Amino acid sequence: MPDNGLGKFFKHSAVYAVGNAANRAGSFLLLPLYTHFLSVEQYGSLELFYVVSGVVSSVLSVGLAHAALRFYFEYREPAERNKVISTCLWTTALYSIPAVFLLSRWNATLSVWIFGDVSYAGAFNLVYAILVLELMRQIGLAYFRAREYSTLFVVVSLLQLVLQVACNVYTVGVRKMGVPGVLTGNLLCVFAGWLFVGAVVVKECGLSFDGRKMKSIFKYSYPFLFTTILAVLLQNLDRITLRAYFSLREVGLYALACKFGGLMQDLILEPYNRSFGAYRFTIMRSENARELLVKIYSYLVTGLAFAGLGITLYSKEVLRLMTEPAYWAAYPLIPLLVLSSIVSGSGYTFQTGLLYEKKTTYLIPISVASAAVNVVLYLVLIPRFGMFGAVYAVVTKGIIETALTYFVSQRFYSIPYDHLRTAKAVGVTVSLVLLVELLPDSSIVFSLAAKTMLVLSSIALYRLVGCLSRQDLDRARGFLSTFGRRFLPVGG
Image (tube, rainbow, N blue to C red; front, side, top):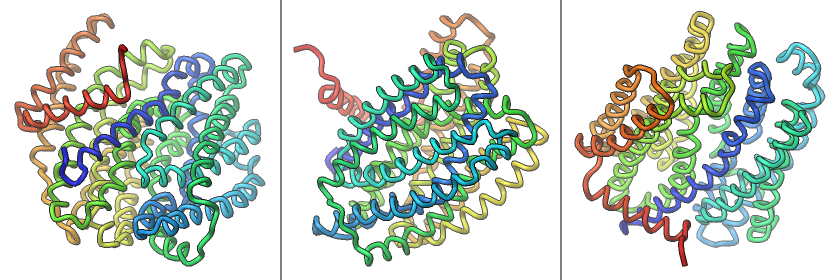
């Protein structure tokens, strides 16, 4: 696909997907370990540590990783581009480290407030260490994206995967350290990734600091502070509300369901965003930029629909094979969470017009409006419907935020997206999922065989309703063949 590097875009997206799969595979490879050595309540406690980490990280990140990528392309001279990266790296370190030291003074208070006692107070220090290293690593990964070091990203991910599995098997399985053992293993894993990425960035970009660039970057990025904080609070308000009205068991089951629902984000959306985030700026002055953006969006939604089908259909069997029976009650939540990922996954693409025209301040009212609706839904639905109420609220919020982003962005840079084509792709997926739910329960072997046949037949259905053309399938086969020969060599 030679036009304006579109083929190159998909190649890097696929490589990022491999890296992300390796990056996230640890949590699934370790799922039998966690569900065997951790009770559902302990699994819920672990999720609440992730909530704290997400909220604090959203405040300290200030959108600098995204801004580093955006301003990297503002300059043509390599030295100036390198200063953008090193300046963002210095800034992240200089304010995040003192901030977490200050926060650590309230460890005991947080432990009592969240868990009811001080037993987990010391574990918050592990969480803070992880997030500081991760914030700095994200700046480095933004540089990797700008330089299209997608293969190097895979190397980092594989390194972290091996360390995460090894460390957590020892801390959780051998030492039986429980939740602090999981956090200790994660810290060692993130430290290794930070060390590798940091060495590359410092070697290529140096350690210079440019105050004028930092001022411009902050002016651009501060709207992302508000939108990111709102997004993270909303992302975790469901867990917080569940904890307030129910027990840690409900938090644990809901967290496990979100892990499966989050596969869409991990395997498709995050790799796509990593590649698309840089790519859309490289084509923004091209005459056929709109045409390329329409193609990419159509492929994205069809890919999400297909992946969502597979995740939804296989999740019941995966749960039964990999977890203890106490965790199986998470399954009914997964289909709706997958649907939410398909809907909200379009939002990043729809931001293109706002980013092209530097109208990022409009992201604030969009986030506030969708947040207000989401908060109301959480407070109304969760006390009444529990875990399902949280899922209903997540789906509704995704629809509202994506729609608002689309309509506002179109005012500044209109892109003729093919919504009928994408609606057909989602419709095929929903229809097949509903069909499976009507079938009677059977053995795992028969169920997996039947679902595999449905997943394979879905490609023909996407083709039949016009979501995929013969040319699209030929291109996909050619791309996968080339990708396989390059990254999965076989034989001599």
